[in-house]
Image 1 (cartoon, rainbow, N blue to C red):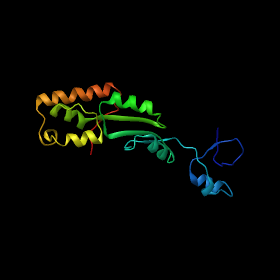
Image 2: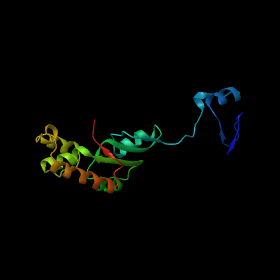
Image 3: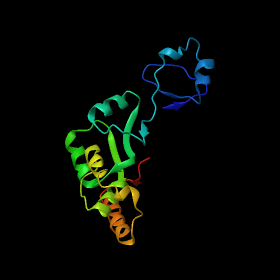
Image 4: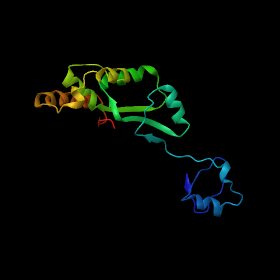
Length: 159
């Protein structure tokens, strides 16, 4: 690859241009509608769709990595194992789910994070309505630490 302030097109040659303006002003006949651009992949930090169909849709937009950093998952290790067996199309990752760590510590539930698990957790609203006691905080924090050790990217609280 070579750098050029006055780009031109030659078969099998790549040029690094500083801006679209370089292409438009320095390349007679340049057609923006027909231009093909090589760009780095995009990382979606707030990807709700963690599935092969969602991966395929995002790949059309140039996404190469999908991360669930909003709510996250818990337990993290089993989520990563499931993703690995699905044959995911893109790179993926997730944060540890603070809400499910709180649910587990305050209600005794060990359900994995999912829509169904969240719906079930709403039946016992202690985790929503009460301030966590020192004992309950002592149960929340190790769950999140364990998730971080198991490859969690960060801790997601949901919004």
